[in-house]
Image 1 (cartoon, rainbow, N blue to C red):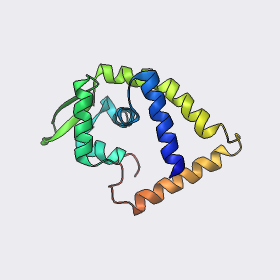
Image 2 (tube, helix red, strand yellow):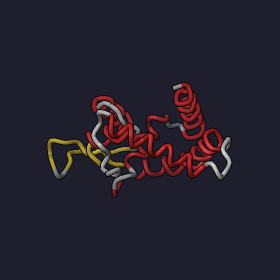
Image 3 (cartoon, rainbow, N blue to C red):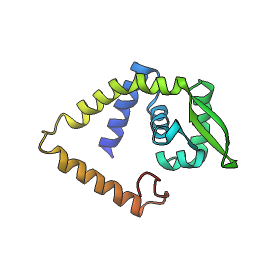
Image 4 (tube, one colour):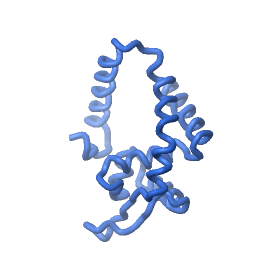
Length: 144
């Protein structure tokens, strides 16, 4: 818990300082890139980032007000809300990613040597799979 809280704090601080977006903003923007065209339903987005649907809805409304997202009816099911990256949203993500990636490399991976990385990645994947198997959220579409 202490690692997760400290790392999220540092990532949020860096993103705000360098790109004027929060880590929560970045989580939403990155999640949308996992779908072709940068669009998915609100429910799928909430599931992907592990948020309650109401939190995702409120946050995406704020991002839409800033011009980073577009909210509209989902074509396949008019009862659902589609969340899509705008051109400004794509650009904000492109602008934020290099410095953010560098911070994560520095803070998370610089203490490991290159021989440790494959095993570490395997361990993280197994932990992730266990969380999915025993968690309450539906399995993400990109992790069959």
